[in-house]
Image 1 (cartoon, rainbow, N blue to C red):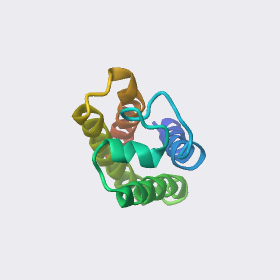
Image 2: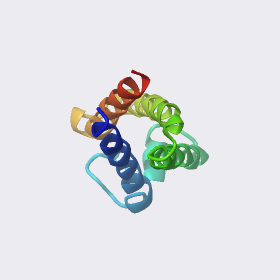
Image 3: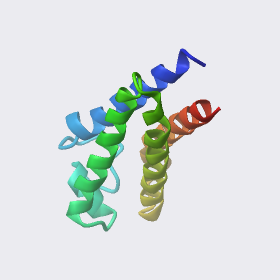
Image 4: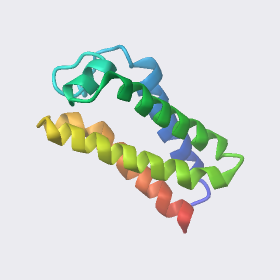
Length: 123
């Protein structure tokens, strides 16, 4: 378990950074509804534009906390729990607008990885 924890931390953090920093304004096959960008995706969910930036701040902050957790392990569980909550919210939004399963996969994978990290860290 000592080896898997930092791998999960870095993998989850890099996944969040990829989506929120590199792909924020790019179209991907996983965007909700017919959205081409992250702000459009949040609008497709019926959320206000400002919520895009709040969720982004939370996800980037959680990713940063996971990286900090490599040196300060007490940061890991709160960050992983926050990501679990955010991924449950993402899955709910995809379900709300009846997205196909394919569009749910990134959030589902991040949820599974984050729950795994929570269980390992709490043990």
